[in-house]
Length: 123
Image (tube, rainbow, N blue to C red; front, side, top):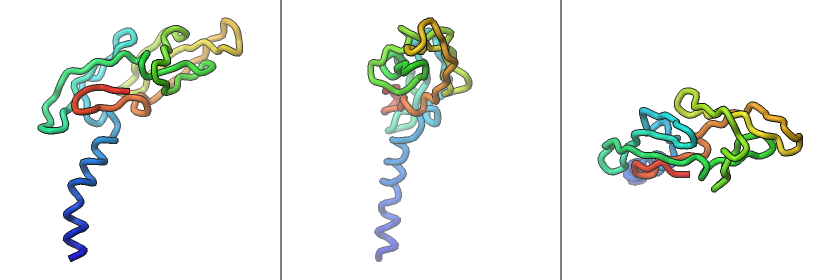
């Protein structure tokens, strides 16, 4: 009986894990233009793809020359030459506030800061 109860919960556990997975696992045609991330992301209900965009200024901040997750961090005010490498590695040269006029190369995995929420890219 316990065996059946455990397997009866399996679909719910799988759904919970899917909700917390990396956005790059459920989105495709991932691209960046300026501060905007574009992707075709799966909806939760039927798996259909939906076009979605997200301004990364809402998700990233510059912390002393290092990109980090940060709500409304406005990274682009102090970072230059940003590019998306592969599907989720985002690289920039960001100003280090401790050293005037000094830019540092930095890379962040966007999977740490961006999620697919029912087909919509979210921080």
